[in-house]
Length: 221
Image (cartoon, rainbow, N blue to C red; front, side):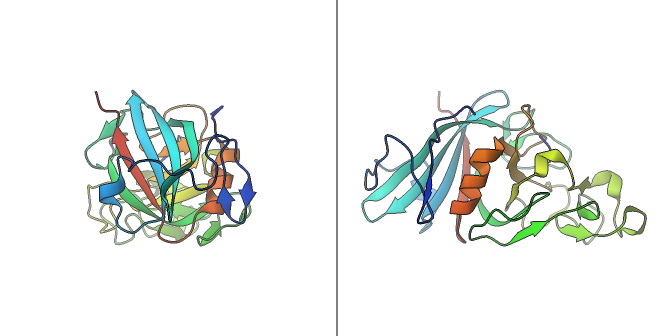
């Protein structure tokens, strides 16, 4: 789904993202997502602050507890804001906790711990609710694809210079949404994805390891 000058003053060092004001070992109290992420040690927190905007904080769990290593990153979410769950054709970002299992992009692999696919004109994400390919990456020429390309996304677009697949609707239930990614922003709302500036996204991709999660909620009133 398509679509900071932030405070992620980060540097990659021994596969750690470090932020000024958050020295190593400077753990914080349990963040909002703590009861919902099990034993995960890497969490990208997205908190909607109104409309299609959100704030992202990046956390690493250490022996001392949760440490924020990137804070206050301006983030774009769905044009319809946040929703309790994903729904096909509805441009809202679903709240919840989702895996970050793999990455892709039109750019070469920037490195990191997740499997990465460099995509081209024949890479698609199937959004065809009536196809067994629903909510999966497919490689085919448009005229030969075994799914409805009009209901799907070609992945060779600028917003997918870099992207991480969010584990939304991993059961691939028709109607429950497809193609939810954490990707490069174009400066505007998304169709349900989470988007930030590409330089910061690349740093996060290099930091991510298997088992990382993204946790999404709305700002408490």
